[in-house]
Image (cartoon, rainbow, N blue to C red; front, side, top):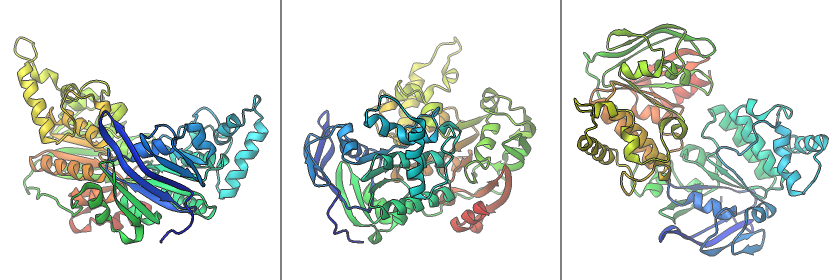
Length: 499
């Protein structure tokens, strides 16, 4: 699709520097009414900075923004909203204790500076936009009780109540199942028909190419590619983002026929989570566990790691029955766990990378007098920092300053420093750009080749296909299929998940 309509949004020669470093270096982009335009790039490429400038959160050093024919040197957030620009962030920025209707209409009420709020007026305003989009939403339900997919629809409705002309969607499908993504795409196409222009920011390249008419790729703060999405393949976009060929070929190491069983799960059950789950994991093997959101896949990992222990069943580690009633029990058994929410569950954000790396293994560095061997600690930190290719000035940088991919490597480093026999990873590359994703998967292959047993819980089907020896498919808390070898195929996995 070649866009010829007058742009509803145009940014020209945007420059933004932080401490002398160019976050954006002469970036230009245009967006036509009713167009879905993908903004792609690795973490740190400048995407977030550009979004902040368009939405008025940050001020550009130079350049111009034109919205609906009016040119601005810079915008405040209120000016951006009044001009018709709305951003839906990954967390949706909703009020969890308010109803869906109140969340949809509240900002409009505030923008109109109403002193008194009318429940009937709020509900009527919300109902109009819901009906206009043909949605089915419980407008009286508290948002905290709704699914992630419904919360996203509420955020979209809220933008439309405020007469959005440009809707920026930041990683909109990260927490959605396949069927929910398809539902979202239906809504996106309805918005196109209304003339709403959409900037779609995502690391999931298959989805990008399925929904976008045009795309712009940023790398190191510059536009390196821009054109019709139909002219790009997934591999071409990956290369534009990273500057190199990124392989997604299925590549698994051979597991020795006599490799020992590291983990055996027998008839594990937990009320409300999963039932009668059994599987085994051998040394050197990568086992994938997948299923739709709510299938019980995460709950299984949390039980094996003792976060929410199983009600019944048995867990054997290296052939010995182990009672896993707590995280301490799991760690003591030689099991590590990289959680799905690395920022709140896996890291200390405001302390240095180095301290995060050794936080779980300090006891291993104590001398016979109980003192910490600082020299050994420094050697381990330097080794992990280099081996995991963490992109930071040095290991003294605080974790909060890192991109998603580098933060994930720090979580990995923390567990690798403990040298667990078994490593569970829940969504190891969620929110991670394509280049970092490839490198993290490579690290997992290397650890498996060295004899570690690895379990990857994910709904990223290409990722699982690329590195897993076997894949278990979970539905409604049960293992409904096991695929291995040549049977591991993306289409087959998707079909089994949706069945």
